Length: 177
Image (cartoon, rainbow, N blue to C red; front, side, top):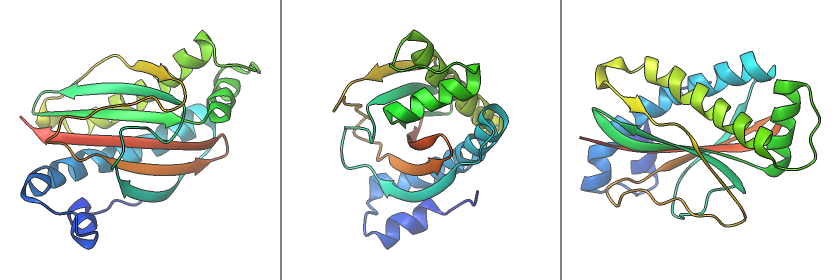
């Protein structure tokens, strides 16, 4: 999984403002480890390697999919990581993790999505120790058109992925403290 320059991406999309400029380097510094951690967790826990399909700026409060795990991050930076998955992707993740086929989103599915999110965020956190970050326990939100609001100073990005278990999106946005 390749790293990227978020600043170059923002400039290329004419999205650079003073506020975004101040947070873009920080977000890129955190997002690059998140991308590596996503690859590592999917490879180790699910036996598949995710492929990043696109990178977009978030202009909506509605995540890409109907099931999301949200982790707050505090310390040297403040931000949010959202792991949003399609219903079938969530069911496939549970089947890979537990070896059990499930037909509906239930407590096991929510727990599995929370655990994958926790592993991704925890693994990435170890890669940016200089920021002295703490991560919250994942909160699971489900339902069509649920909303996730970032502070106004944060312009989140969305990394869209495809994998053997299905499509998912990793959203992230950070600001320095």
